[in-house]
Image (cartoon, rainbow, N blue to C red; front, side):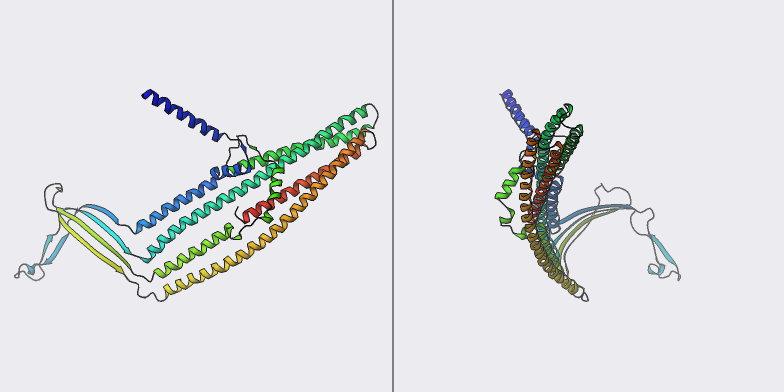
Length: 448
């Protein structure tokens, strides 16, 4: 029976180990999967979650101030020189001559004490406000963590888009490279046979080398974009990573679900939320200043045992002298020469300033929203325009390549049209990047 249990345990362990390994070795990510991975692995998010745990501890720390405080204290001392007291001798001998004194030592060489103290806060206005604030501080930490998660998602989204754009650029460069290589090989044959001048073949070779260098640079840019995505995700640089989405899929999704048509609340903006919470924080500050007018009440209890010896024999059955005290203390503020009222009025002014700042921020965010939507609309139109230009330049280039085979168009003219196609594709890529950049800024504006 024990062997059976062991087999089951080892079997479960193997399953969990394999499952964990599979989770750790995921290399293909959609956009949403990449964002989720970053939320779980990005160091900024980890620190934000630790801030929440720290805030929870802060709540308990503040709560503990109003709970019983108990302490014990022990003390031992030895008088190396016992104090000497001097009194007038006439106190004990009326016949003593004037000025005569008596000297005698008072006290024991060894003494020790054990003291037990307990105190309890009964009422304090500042403590009540502090307890409320500590709980609100925990809420602020949770809000900050959510904002950090959204910020990380936005950074991953932008990096993911850059990877897709870089991959698309490599694909475009690869298609041009293939056609240019084919053209170069044909013109080289024509030049060898004397059909065309060698200079024409050399011009095509220069164009081919230029495209080949451009493709290599595009591949390097793609690698840089992928490493940036790994950084934002908290992914190991040495591990392979593959994006499963394509640029066209992202563009189609954005066309079907345009940010311009999405209902979003400007008050979800993280800066607005944080400034709103700052106003609540200042409201607690006002409460605390007003609480300074209230009395504070506390109770205490003290018990001590004291022993005095001429010899170090505290562990023998000799007398210990107890002292027990308990009481209630109350502190009532009476007058502060206007300090408290000035603090209260300053706190009230700060709250009014917070309201003004909040209204100003709301207006600024609405202006930013209008500006970004206008920029996005312009970017979408530019993408469509540049896409049409690419398609047109592609058709012109392909026709030129075909006509070159019949000798109607010179190789030099084909390379010029190739440069035109490269320029059109570059403009198209830049337009897409601009549109995606504005899309990410809109997401950040709405804290998505």
